[in-house]
Length: 388
Ligand code: SF4
Image 1 (cartoon, rainbow, N blue to C red):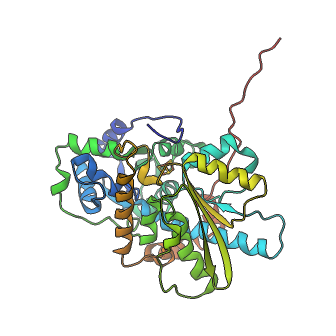
Image 2 (cartoon, protein in one colour; image 1 turned 180 degrees about the vertical axis):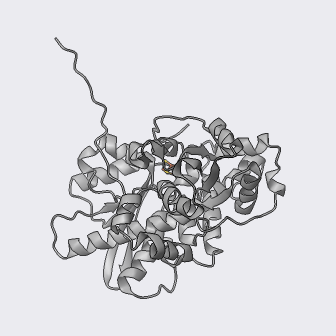
């Protein structure tokens, strides 16, 4: 079950199969970072076995026209969220009372759903950056559709997510253009495993293949989005270099890692000490929010993920029955993939640079705002009092 209170759990497998069989549709798929660290468990492989290349070849054989990586969009999220963090931080330090800190991450729809329903008085604090799933969809249905010369309606975007709240997120009105969603269907890791098994493919013995480009190129920073602390570590790698103009000697911020439900760390931005908070699990998120509301929070930035362990422990992943050693192995796999990557900072991703040069202009530009940012609403259930 989804630990995040996702409103609906709908299996879109049949819709995806129908789209794959339709010769008039171009069907592309994106896969979230946490999926590759857990999918193998559904095929009897040990927890923590990375199956990135095998997953790509299985998706290709299932008939997807292009196999892309949500990690690409995670890099894009960092460009937008990191720029927003620096912008808010600078204004705040310059005495602008209108600008609030801490900035809260916004890539987890379980968490977004939570604060819209339970803390609607604080919806101006989280970053306005969309989640990687939704950034991917928006870029696929504009930039990439134009490149292919395919009409928006004829491009179907499928996402493979560790998450059930992503199904609900993909259907939100803010992420549709004239009723056509940026992400058409979101399948869970377990649903993908089911599809692979139904097709009689043996995942363990699939060849390792690479993602397609341009939306398949990613860095180590994109990969670590799958683990608690990973989003803020990825943002720190980029924000540090953009703020100081200096190269990081070491990109691993060990102080941001770990499994404690609430963590805090200080990061030295060349003389400016940044207080960073991390919470995973909604009980811990509530404590963080109550501290902010009561003026007790001393953080500049906070990462919040709804699921224990972050997305590696998402409700769409192979069931782990509360075994934290399985979550730990999945997290280790994520950091292994990060450390094996040639590029480990989002702003160095060559395809992201090209996207800004040829299409978006700059982070937080008008076009980037329209396609990559969002707004939040008070979503408390409206209670109708019975008329006397
Ligand atoms: Fe979904 Fe990840 Fe958030 Fe869990 S932590 S609700 S898997 S986005």
